[in-house]
Image (tube, rainbow, N blue to C red; front, side, top):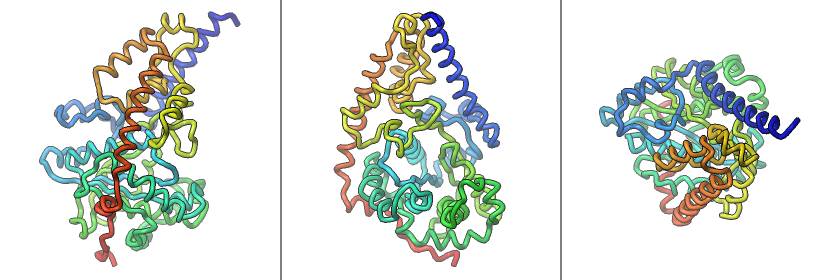
Length: 384
């Protein structure tokens, strides 16, 4: 194969990769009965158009109209989105917390369960105490560094909030093993802990804010990646049986892995992710080794242009940089071959280093007194 043929093959492979990524999200939305956001965005006032909506990083929904009604009336709604504390936060987690912050500004009361029990039963950590330590020493200070309002944010580590297990026990009679197998498949139900967690504990987290202790039934929104959709489906079904309000759902795109744009950043695979605890040297090294949408031959790149949709480096800017004009210009310049991969890596490196450094400074200022304001410890008696 001559050099020209190799260049063409490389370019065509990246075009096919782009098509697969676009198809993945479209097909997942259709497969799971989700609705796209075209109609909602068309009628949504500009002041409600968050960065993630504008850039199509939130790509589908289920029942979001109920939340929009609350926003338009200036009424409070509930948002629930949990986190598995098996590793430090990375930029993929930041996508979620940026969305939660936007929703809080629009009137959302935020509940963030830290599911260290899930970390343990799924074998992601060696012990509950290990995941608990990660949650309190690493995860919670990092979450608070994003700037959540303590009056409208509730955090809890599941193993330290036994009330959630009482609620889960109460809910467990609403679900059969057959239902769980249909929704999750047998591969996710390999031990009793996984069965109880997926069948009842996760459900309890979602329905908790509708208990009388928190004001009773109210519109609830669950922002998730597509892999978490089955949990929302189960919660919607059980909510109807219990005469509660069915939770709404917003589904966002994964932050692409640094090494493979078809995969997501993973805390268990350090080479794929930029952690919010990484040093400048580590960040730049990871970005320099990241997958790009450029053709390896410079002249070919300048002639054919890059493919931003498959570029993990461009994705760092697209998912996190607040300047719409800059991101749009970089997108156009990259497509036209006006900016090289190394230049894009330098730009992304400077931005991410600054972003992570500022986050680390804010995190260092979070003390135990501040943390206590966010921790949920309210007794639950209404279902006993």
